[in-house]
Image (cartoon, rainbow, N blue to C red; front, side, top):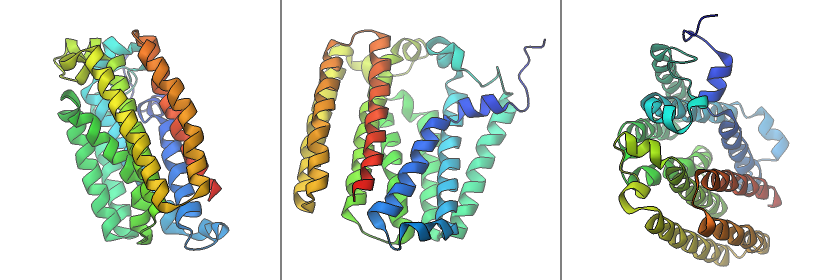
Length: 287
């Protein structure tokens, strides 16, 4: 049996494009359209072809971002998570680059059909995700911040499509941005050994474990204060109740963060962030 990488591997494509993350993005966009913006009854959105195309094009941009990230990080990933490496092991490197370019091109073309502002958003997102993988990821905080902005933008683009200024969409976009920022820094704590080996200057490498944790406590505090500020001005009892209840898992998260000092602890916290983000997506249905 040959160990040579293939031109095509369905399993490899699923791994490199992080399909669970793509499902969360798709779900968040549909939930935002149906429950937060609701320009028409939810069942009628099944016939909104452009909404479906918007979701597909966003997923292509996100998938291309994951692909190029793994392409540039293959040496680091061989240290941090060798069992998850796809580039050069399951799929040939040149095929990976072709997939990245094709996904971005198709997404932008779909965006042009959906609307010029959507297309502009896709062009911006694809460029930032490429720059993140190529340079920004190896810099302290800037990389974390940029990819978090793209996560928030994946929800805001629904408002851009409907040309609707809905405060709830901005609250959830901020929620996605903040949780992603926290999770990205957690992932840097998880992967610092491989990053250090290849000259990355992430926060844990530049500041160390203790100072990076202190920054996370500040971000968590600012996030909670900001969320309650937004909900106070929106004056939504449902939203206020949800975020008040969310304080409990955040306290648990903070306690686990204080105690964390090993890779497995940070891996758990990264998954914990993703579950909190998923709960936020489902909470959109309350509206």
